[in-house]
Length: 170
Image 1 (cartoon, rainbow, N blue to C red):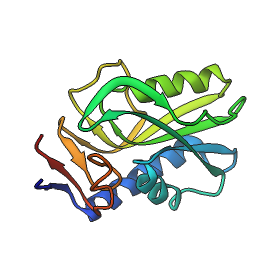
Image 2 (cartoon, rainbow, N blue to C red; image 1 turned 90 degrees about the horizontal axis):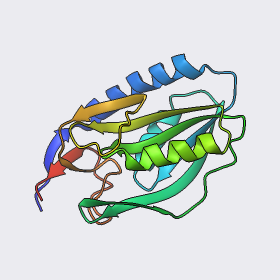
Image 3 (cartoon, rainbow, N blue to C red; image 1 turned 90 degrees about the vertical axis):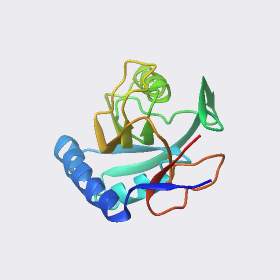
Image 4 (tube, rainbow, N blue to C red; image 1 turned 120 degrees about the vertical axis):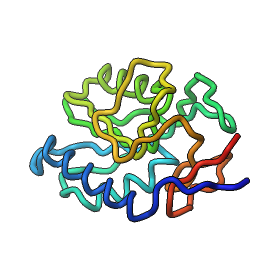
């Protein structure tokens, strides 16, 4: 498969810096914040983002999946439970927002479990493919509805390690 470059490593890093500044302005640097990384795709974005934020952001992870190949199944598979977030502020970090189903379900679960504040950020906001009425609070990059790979985004587990974001034609 050919990967067509979309965002360079420099464009990604500039966008992550801008997003980190916005997140810091929202949360501040004093109160603890759970930085909840959605595995596996958001590892790259989370690492870059947290290096730019102060130590009050405490990393935790969760694994939820909904994709089979290049399509969302619409069903969530919870591979791990959400963290104890009662009375805590949570920043949910994901690689891409497309259908919105995963983040909508996770945020609802975090609120149900007593989180005092749930804010979301994604590396890429894809336009025109929502199945849920959900939008991220912060996003680094935005593009049309393409099948993306690189910078944590994959196709059947491959291409995650590309230093840029590209797209493949299905």
